[in-house]
Image (cartoon, rainbow, N blue to C red; front, side, top):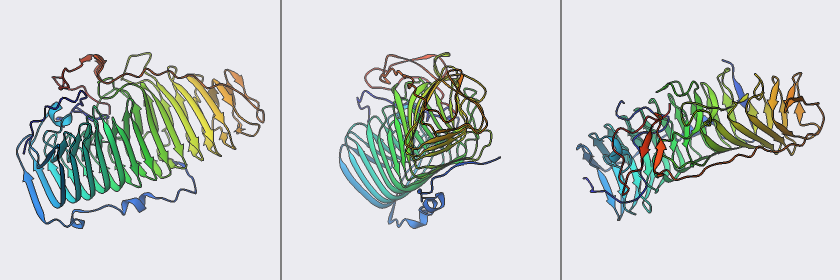
Amino acid sequence: MKLNKKITIPIIAICLVGATTACGTKTATTTTTNETTTSTASTFSQNKLSRQDINTTKTLKNSSDGEHVIAVDGTTENYSNTEVIKTGDSDGDEADFYGENAAIFATNKGTLDMSEMVVDTNGTHANGVFSYGDGTTVNISNSYITTSGNCSGALMTTGGGTMNATNVTAETTGNSSATIRSDRGGGTVTVNGGNYKTSGKGSPTIYSTADITVNDSYLESTASQGVVVEGKNSVTLNNTNLMANNNTKNSNKSDYYQAVMIYQSMSGDASEGTSSFAMNGGSLTNVNGDVFFVNNTTSNITLSNANITNNDANGVFLRAAAAGWGTSGSNGGKVNLNASSQAINGNMIVDSISTLNLYLNDNSTFTGAINPDGQSGNVYVELKNGSTWTLTADSYVSSLTCDVNSINLNGHTLYVNGVAYNENTISTGNAIEIKTSDSKSSDAKKSDAKGGSQEKPSDGQSSKGTPPKKPE
């Protein structure tokens, strides 16, 4: 089944999932703990479904390149207890922007409700379940999804579509194949419960050019970042456990590995503006590298009562720094980090073209250093409502607001705008103003990930040629 889907929605998406390679080519422990968080990774991993858990009564197949097994175009349809098997290949924009070759596809304000489904794809650019376009809604529950080809996400949302997933287990093994995947045009994705795992290069569990909320779930990446947010988009994790082991790279654009990457590739995938990452409860365990990396964008990071562990003694908690995306000299990271009832362990590095406003509230604790190698970027630290900072090395900030007992120098020196801070004194400072330049992803010119430019496609159609590479 193949739809003629040249739909003129003036938002498009590209073939690459960020932190990915080109589609088709396809220790000491630092722990941040909060006793009131009761969820554990093992608890959520027990929610994992297997194929045998799903009672299917019929099987639907399609092996033709570019076609679908199930396609909903502007109608409302329901499927349950069905096994869906898709083979066959596609490439480029038609697959990754518009859903060509996806096993299950909904578009044109259609509504697709599914439960107790088994979805399996084995092909290049063969996404599992795809929601495309404003007004399109896909609801899937109690289902099992696997994809094994490159550029083949499990849940894919573009062009303003809506995706709702409840108690879904999804596993992808190909490169550039996030389990919860979006691309240009984004949309709204809500995940309740479930188990999501990736093992391919450039395949985070979540790649967001959308507004994505994940509740009470388990996420695991064994090669890529756990979560990537690009541009003016968001990821919110509520009572969710994330395990990330970023140990592969696709380019030389960054020297670092990380669990959560927030950036702007300038490829045209995502609007420019302030990104958002929030974590409420749950846990984040990082195996290799840094916990957070922010580059070439402005980001609000909000943490509340989450257990955060970094198993890499050489990694830092936060790195805001330039890398290979954007214009050299102005492509640092600009971060507002808000912590409430949150323990933070690990250093924070802010390079000379980056900015950090760190707000510690509601008895939050920070054990670590900021720029221990010397003054660099602009940094403001504010501690309120019983929050404390224990230094583990000399630290350098631009401005500081704290109460008498907020800072434990622990034998080190805290320099505030070049002047040593006296322990047990009040300090009053000012936050660093962070300016953003919001713009649409469809602006006429964008610098692509290779440093060139990409013309805006006309009439909502895809741009021609090979899409730019995404980050590792």
